[in-house]
Amino acid sequence: MSWPPVGLAATAPAKEAEPQTKITLPCDIAGAFFPAADVDTYEFAAKKGETWWVEVASERLGRNTDPFVLVQQVKDGKFTDVAELYDIAPPMKVTSNGYSYDGPPYDAGSPDVLGKFEVKEDGTYRLQVRDLFGGTRSDPHNVYRLIVRQAAPDFALAAWAVHMTLRNGDRASLSKPMALRQGESRAFEVAVQRRDGFDGEIEIRMEGLPPGISAAGLKIGKGKTYGHLILTADEKAPRGFSLANITGKAVIGGKEVIRPVRVASMEWPVKDAKGEIPAPRLMADVPVSVTDSEQAPLSITLAENKVFEAKAGETLKIPLKLAWRNEFNGSSIKVKAYGEGFSAIKEFDIPLKAAMHELVLNLAELKITPGDYTFALQSLGICKYRYNPAAVPLAEAEQKKAAQEVSAAATDPVKKKQAEAAMTAATNKMKAVTTAANPTDTVEILISQPIRVSVKTAAPTTAAK
Image 1 (cartoon, rainbow, N blue to C red):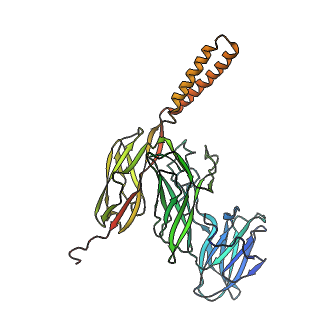
Image 2: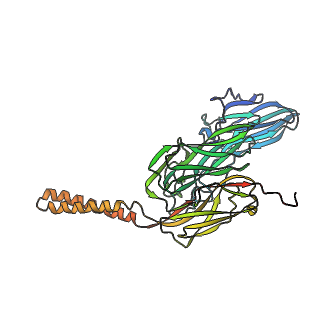
Image 3: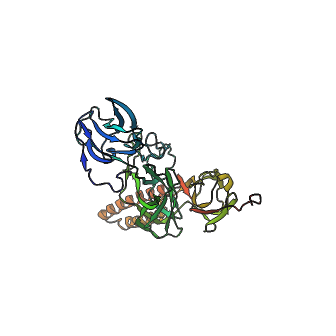
């Protein structure tokens, strides 16, 4: 998701030359980690005070490589290390083993290189590129692209569904699609790879949604590495499907910049991730759907659909409305929050079956500064879920019809045999749909409707006047 940089030519204008290539900066060079243990060296002149950003793409070109860059000053026949550049770090902690949720199973980082070095004095320098995995491999297809440039601040984005904590038997529960039930909200983590020092705020937006679905992007704050996108289906949303579009907007150098958000998902379900580690992929499209055959087990909405206003330092009270549609285990749900500034809300309980709940926000305690905010509440709950209960009466009707056909064919051996086979099939189907429709404990990720708050500047005190 962090390759290629915007505006990059399809192919590099220059190629490596063994054993050493003299270059001028900036540069864009194509090379290969070949033969085994290959080290490509590029020599150049640089002046004091210059800062150069170095990017190597190889793993992001689909190669199983781990590029490394060493920058050295060449002086009096000696080489002095200036910088060592390694992997592009993930913007957030990822899972340690591919299936336990101590982080998402998606890694928005890369073994490729993106870093910088500063020139402390005029002189001759060299840059060496090697594959840390290439000591014994001799594959001419292990290509790379080296770019050395002055700062070009930018960003790249990817999103994936928020995951629940995995338990034994939940190995395939790694990903939630953008498939919503009526009255349901879904949260998506949006990770950003910041390029060449860009640290500005990013606004997330989503367009092209089916009727009855709305989206609210919770801003990625200044210097932050991730935010959230909240999709909400109306309680009466009609059945629908669309290919949507997610973008991130920021201001860089005084100009508005819009970048696409790629969506990540799993290549295929994995029933036992201890035996087969899940593999993620970036999707070509952003499919979004809503069904009218089922409603969310719980909807947390605003009693008043408006922007709530308060002054900095005040206490703000927001009335919430809750619609419980399934039986939940326990006596309450524990609730936190997503959203810049409001993620510090202390966890609180909402009693089961409560029709209303008042959310009390201490803006002074949360240190909320004046501005416009959007956040959402989130919880986990275990509820009794029935899969497709509407199929039970249909299967029952089929079973009764099959029984009638068996009775009608009692005197015809051929028809009786056919009718009995149909009866067996109908009985098996009835058993299957009844079993599926029996209440089963299911972990649900519960997300509220987005909440919008406008915080105004507090009036000056008498002492200040």
